[in-house]
Image (cartoon, rainbow, N blue to C red; front, side, top):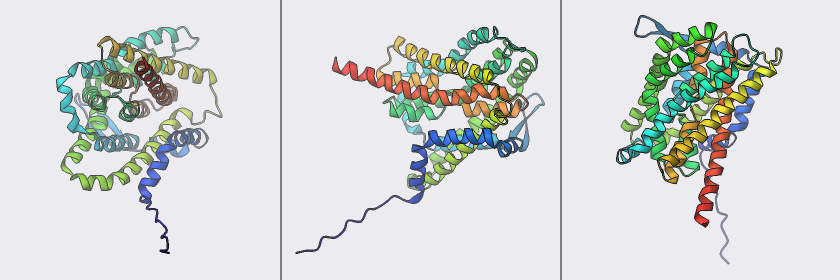
Length: 363
């Protein structure tokens, strides 16, 4: 008899395996980062205070380049390396969905913020909950999160359309961020109104260019110029560093809001932040779906528009808040709440849209 050879199991390299493991457990890792921020905020607060340079902006002012903004830039750079930009020309033939998704990303928060501000203004708070309104404005002002492409693929959405909306909203961010912050300044009081006006006039647009647009364009350029086989060989390493970068950025941002929270708890403020962030997030997903149905988008485009409307780059909003409002940690509470809730909302939207698709196929 011929001896049977044992089949050798070929395992993938260590880095891809570690990356895959962390991605599968990203929710747990994120919760751990939040817990570490509440219990051990010292390192994160020190990281937030590292200023690397003062970058001149039009008007004679200067905007600060901080270590968190550098972490954000690397995160967006690695995300842009994975963007299939070659698929975007297809959108030229069907621009309506792209225009609707991009416009909705800005217009939905602009429409919802006054409603939420009116509700918050009735609460017994000395500044009319201006800190929470400021946090909501910082989230609503940001472009669509790159993570929307992952959720869009998972839900069977039009990948090209999601990528197009992400890039379009990013390129428009030097205009849309100051617009949102300027409108929010009229709904707040005290130093919040002043800070929002200042950021709208100087820091908002500069931040969008330096920390959002430049790393995205750099990532697309590197992807374009690098041979495919070389890029694929290095993507696991870059992805792993990007994931560590994202967790470190999450920890740093959370330290600003949760640092010392256990010793000086404000449960009412925390509940209010979660409720208003949840309201903005849920309404954005629902309105996005309604808009997609209004323009009679097919299922793939409906998924793309829905997710793009509900998922904003909360990390960018947190970095902008940490840089410009370091003495107002309550501003970060709705930003962090939105960051978690939008992922839950994306998962729920995925399930609902899949169920509707299955039902329509049965009928």
